[in-house]
Amino acid sequence: MKYAANVSSSRRKSRKVRAVPVRKDDEVQIVRGTFKGREGKVTQVYRKKWVIHIERITREKVNGATVSVGIDPSKCVITKLKMDKDRRALLDRKAAGKAADKGKGKFTEQEAAADVEIKAVQPIHLRDVQQLVLWVLGDAVAPRWVFTKNKPLIPQVVLLLAGGLTEHVFNQHKALMPTLASFQAPAVALALNSNVRPGHSVGALLGVPQNRKRKREAQAEAESAKEARAGQPPFLPEHYVLTLREMQQLEYPVPTLGDDGFELTRCTLVDAAGSVLLDELVVPQNPITDYNTRYSGITAAMLEGVTTRLEDVQRMVKCHVKPHTLLVGHSLDNDLAALKMCHCRVLDTVALFPHPRGPPYKSSLRYLASKYLQRAIQEGEHDSAVDARAAMDLTLLKIEKGPSYGSNEAQGVDKLPDVLAATGRGSKCCLVDRQETLTKHATGHASAILVTSDSQAAEVAARQVKNSSWGFVWSQLQELSNFHFER
Image (cartoon, rainbow, N blue to C red; front, side, top):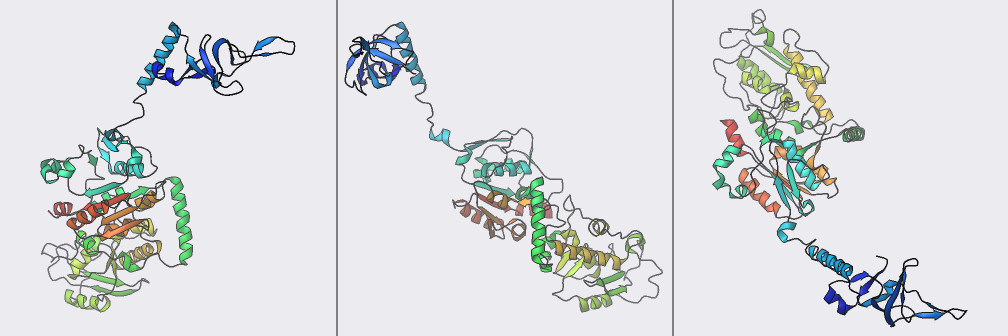
């Protein structure tokens, strides 16, 4: 307001207004400038020059004429207001507006607290859960299935994967889980597929798909890293040996073969160069009812005159395969079952190149050789030496390229701790899990804590949640899902 002037302190309390536009016949006092301290009534509001004229504030011109001196309204304080209906209406409007704004901008502690409201009507996916984490702690787009209130006030996100805990089981046993029961009604999440394993759910939550720009950057980083290694593989072959849990999932160690199983009729071993170390035909102990030639490559003519028995082949194999030897093959659980032998240092191409749909599906050796080696095998009858060389070459290729090569969960995917560390908040991550998960998903931007049981995981995770330095805490409960799977 160009003509506004402050109201004197005595009038300010009674009128409940701090400043109003100056009008004719208002009484004012000059508080700044040459005429400081002078008082008088406003005789004119001179809009052309944005000044007011006050009685007895004059000067003489050269010709002797007396003229009023223009005073800026901001240098004056109104001591008495000229009241009329328009002035009263103005003061009433200002008082009403001030009363309405009295509580504006003030919030209670409950209103200012961070909160999450689930709005999902349709089932959500695991990627939607990941998007919520990236939205709260990173720079992702806000998910539509949930509303996050006061996001900057959320200091930490805890993500706990409880495999096997379905909505039905949760509703039946709420009394055993009072903390979870106190939360909002859970959103229904869809599994990746009908045969999903816990490891695949972990990959969907802790692996962030790369966009096109990030894929180009990752490819450039891989090329530079390959040049820096000067031909050396990223990891030694021992890195790819199946763990005890992986061997159990792939039905290692081998159970005793029953009468209705397959019998061993040929055993072939090759070295890393593809040279044949052992290739023996074996006469089964039980009568052969079906040679299964299409898949075994064995015919009745081939076994004529053969006297080698299973015990003989076992001794031959032991001469080449020592306890420390790395045994390479495709679905070696079947081979070891036929040999009735056990071995703990195994590199299985089924695990090195997992099926896109996950277990229990397995990619065939023929498919893997065609895709990764550009080699056609098993076009007619099977040749065990050709199959052995293909499995060996696939394994050597995996060792050369690194763990992410041929892995559906790792191709074109960044690890969640790396993504969170690169965002504006730079959240620190803590992963509390088994060795298999930590090996795949822990990075230099995350603290990895190894646990071996659900009770230990819950105890350690609860302790880490109290650590304010962590922005993201991950843990997993597996024993319930393992129980369901074993049944």
